[in-house]
Amino acid sequence: DTAVSQTPKYLVTQMGNDKSIKCEQNLGHDTMYWYKQDSKKFLKIMFSYNNKELIINETVPNRFSPKSPDKAHLNLHINSLELGDSAVYFCASSRGSQGGLNTGELFFGEGSRLTVL
Amino acid sequence: KQEVTQIPAALSVPEGENLVLNCSFTDSAIYNLQWFRQDPGKGLTSLLLIQSSQREQTSGRLNASLDKSSGRSTLYIAASQPGDSATYLCAVYGSARQLTFGSGTQLTVLP
Image (cartoon, rainbow over the protein chains, first blue to last red):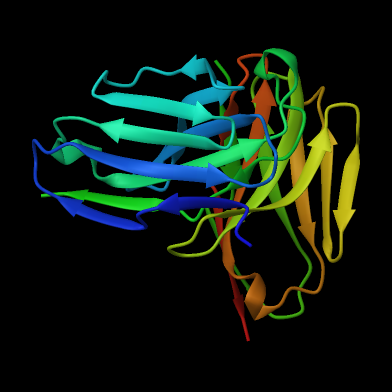
């Protein structure tokens, strides 16, 4: 049973398209995250949600919009894709506490490799 | 702004050797520090989590220490094996309520 699962694992698309990456966790965690790993393998947070509420929204173009229908899901929608969006996107979850303060381990999904042509 | 540095960037050792990976961070006001392992083309696997009140954590052949005041953590791997080859990432969770990652140490254990 996969704890944090992302789909699709690979996504190849043309510039200008709109795409979504889905994430689900079955750990009962109440905090979920999206991270971006660039070509130099550096991981940087994009968004954090606690109990469906946006906690962290780093400097990310507004073409990126997270959506959390419930505590177990955090999807990432990307509009008008650009070449620079090519990267691996990781979803993660943790058992946060009040206000989204993380006190536990983060568990990551396997990543979704996005290639924009 | 928190910055996390990992040294060395790459390390190659013969099988059986004990080794130490280093992690340093600029803001000592952290809640916890986590070590991860990433295999090529894969996600991150959590290895050890150290809360700010703790000095070290152990799991099997792995031991992680934390010196919050000096902004340092080390990951000690005993009796290294080829299967330990991977990139090891250090990440700290601080007052900004986000996990800040280092750039990783790429470890190769030679048979």
